[in-house]
Length: 204
Image (cartoon, rainbow, N blue to C red):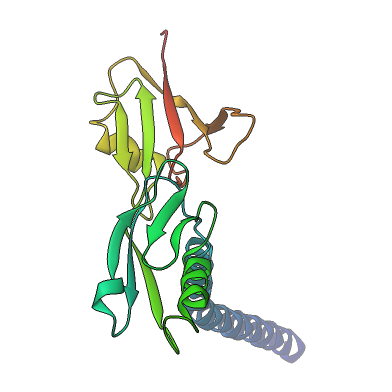
């Protein structure tokens, strides 16, 4: 009888130990998730920011060029169809494909020496060039790009889908795609300036 009682006591103790161990492991996992989630979010945000800092300028972008202490050299200008812009003392030059940082360096280097000792230049984008959406949307056409824009938001800007729209049959042609090959995308796909979106018709 004593042996049987001892057996049950040992079994209960083992079960209690397993339960305690399970609680400890669960607690550790919860704590780790709390610390890892913000880090993951920060990593995603940093990646997104980094990607957008590499945005390349193109025709239609409206930019502001500010030279500190030189009001006459502070201008707002839209990049021309040829991918060029004109700037005092530097004349007309090509900016197509440049990042904002590259353009700042180009202007600073051009002004340094002959015109200014130590020019401090800041370039900012006031208005991004357009993207285009056609097919089965209520208001097809061109719209100004906005950072964080997705296909879903683009459709909303275009007045929403028509009744005949096939929401699972949407294609994009990217501006930098030389072959102009349409690729299938989801509503959550991130857009870039110059993208051409086509919403196909549903036949059912």
